Picture 1 (spheres, rainbow, N blue to C red):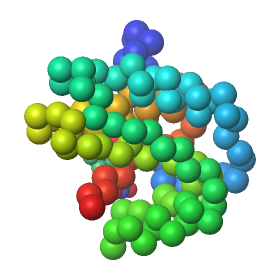
Picture 2: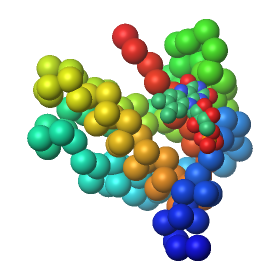
Picture 3: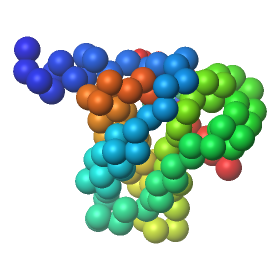
Length: 120
Ligand SMILES: Cc1cc2nc3c(=O)[nH]c(=O)nc-3n(C[C@H](O)[C@H](O)[C@H](O)COP(=O)(O)O)c2cc1C
């Protein structure tokens, strides 16, 4: 099996985490991989916001009625904030691809991670 196929196999949604702090170098690596993500017409309709403060992470469990349990134990989150006014209706696809870059990079780095979609 090729390396990329192995990585795809390794990536699974992980929703409970240890308290082991994540090295800043690993967060930076995930961000670099996210920034290399493709977007329609190269509009890059995103901002990546790193949240590492527990006091800000824990309340995110309340952002939806279900499916937010990962924020009970997460030690970091990368918020992909998408701006629909910067593109022609492609923000959701652009954001989803960036999220997948982050999730695959996290799996490669041995980090558990899970995507959660939030709409305002
Ligand atoms: C767009 C999108 C939104 C998702 N939202 C959530 C979520 O809110 N909560 C959650 O626990 N998992 C969420 N997931 C993870 C899926 O449940 C998960 O990818 C799916 O069950 C397959 O499992 P796997 O990732 O381990 O292969 C989301 C996945 C995607 C692609």
